[in-house]
Length: 150
Image 1 (tube, rainbow, N blue to C red):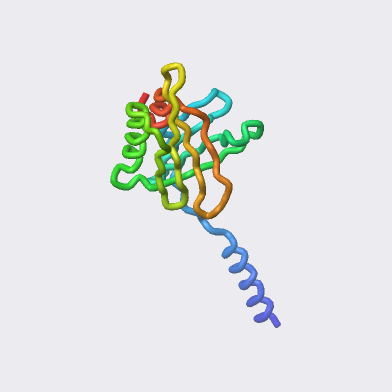
Image 2: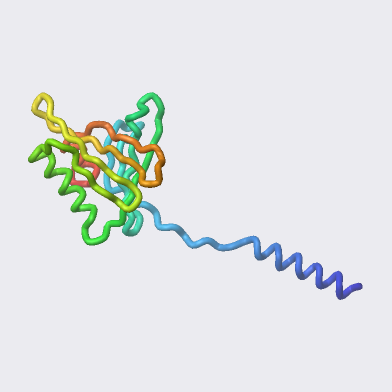
């Protein structure tokens, strides 16, 4: 009986210890840039390792503070290439949207020019069928801030 009691006690002790695990520290995201008001970031770009994440307020629903994200890996200068593509559109305004296919999302860059100021809007659609979103219209200065160039 003592052996059975001792064995059950050991089992309980080992089971209790098995429930506690030491988790590895996750890499903290580094903020590359952001734009918006002081209380509400309209668009923010962070980087965790080689994963770049764009967090934006969905302008499809401006009455609700709904934030969405899209991400891609910064392999072979993908982030700089994305920045260069957006900036090139300010110089040579395209007549049609520029479509960028990412692994999980599709980003359409739509440009407009009014009162001699060019702006771009990112329209994001998710490949898994989830509802996409739209950023606010962004100027070149705001794009520079988002990508940490200002």
